[in-house]
Length: 232
Image (cartoon, rainbow, N blue to C red; front, side):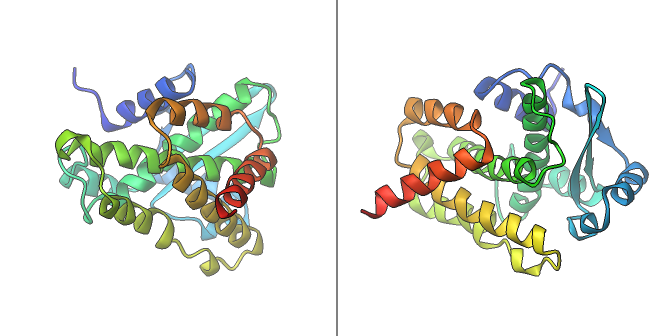
């Protein structure tokens, strides 16, 4: 049976980091449930994208996950399957698709490791930072697949960075907390992925595995230390 794009991406993340123990595709929710959970999430959630969202809820020692994709986003990926070609017509949809899977997976892994502060700002920033970094690496794999000898050019990387980092507009958020979250994590992710680009395959894998195990403060310190080091 053919794998879905969703299951392929989940399997890629699990091979990179750890098994999450559940099929995240079972966590997909419809538009009606998304609307209900958005109301429960509070006022700031109204500013988040209506095209794709991940919802987390803790009940006792259980974590409940809901992943929502709009019909429009799914239609775009079906019409322009990134497994056939990655281009301007599908890259934004693929970014959103991958990031929500990543949010759900890392939230579940952190919860399994004992983290319970899923409502904290550091937890949210940790997920956002990790998602931007991991999505960049996934996009590199997609690009490499379509290149001879799997060589990704500087032009390819600039194109990916434009869509993943430069096109973001955190200042558009009215909510100060959201504005700060997306501004900081985008800047940190852009810096860290520049560093990852200097590493070979095995060193990069070792680095991102160590990085994932850090809390948000330690991740930020790690990136700032690397940035300072590169500047000297």
